[in-house]
Image (cartoon, rainbow, N blue to C red; front, side, top):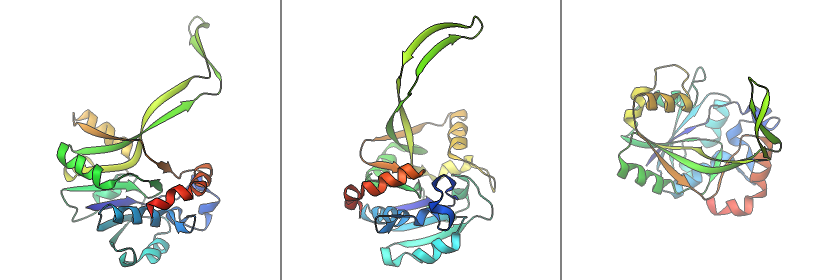
Length: 233
């Protein structure tokens, strides 16, 4: 299995931690976020990784080198300008027919091999790993007829359920035909483009551990969960 890791963001939501250190190298316990992810990938059978970089690229490259210390073969693709979450994948040469793609700031005990095998058997162009999220609104919510300025309904602190993207994907190389050259192109752009072109996108629901370290609260939770996360290493 080959994997592409997207690690070119500035991590602005995780300030002040990312003021002087790249987000993928922010420590969780005694190891960097990206180091934990790479260790997990190796454990699941990945042998070669392509890391897409932009911000603080030299520091990340110096930290991981060629990947031999982790038992991996690591290559780097450095963007001159930010290309979003999917645009950088288009630049990578030599990708196999099927490969994994993921954000470099997540922690999960997802079995990447199982996701990969599910994707191969389905033969879809894209498989998106998803996670169940419940969002609570801490207010009384009014349903309003704006024209008449009258209340039509009321719900006290409602809860909403969603299936959200985990930031982990299995792709067929054909998906890159829908990604423009040298232009910022995000996961949202890809999803809308595939749906507009009547391309079926498969989901891989997951109910284990997953945490997207995007904000200081998420980072603090990751450190609180270190005992649980030890099984990833």
